[in-house]
Length: 239
Image (cartoon, rainbow, N blue to C red; front, top):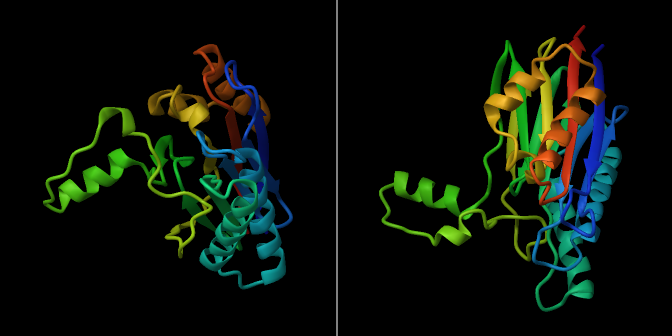
């Protein structure tokens, strides 16, 4: 039996009028994650809410053998259909970074630029890759292509929930170990708190909620230009 502790917190920040981040923590289903409504499009809060509701329902209905890719794609279709009603011209969108615990394994589904970090043996690892223009250009250059991007577009998303086609979903499988810590978070944290700072903070001997509150508070003190949301998971024991 797995023993975990978890916390989930969000802050609207100092600039935005609305909080379009959403979070998920369901220990019974083993679901933990975040969704961030895409800026610049209407209906961000509705998109993020529907993403997490759809995935939760899909996991619950699937029983012991969920196909996480299929479940996320179904959520993508649901967001796309809602977008046709709320915003026919532009659609709506959301990121999704979600972890599902099955037995002693963690399966992560990822679309967009929210992130999942793991701390193991005092070493921080970014498990996800941002689906951004900058990262796509880097990947294409590594394949020998000559491509460029405008600096102002470096953080623009190349993939999000709510697309009208079959969505590519990043799936990361990771065996859990005792004392692992996992942070699912939106870019309202990651653009303000760098990885060495996160490594130091996640290594502290604190309960999940006060530690997560400290991480979010740091982002807010640095200006809080965006909603800041995190879900922090501690793995205590496996048996």
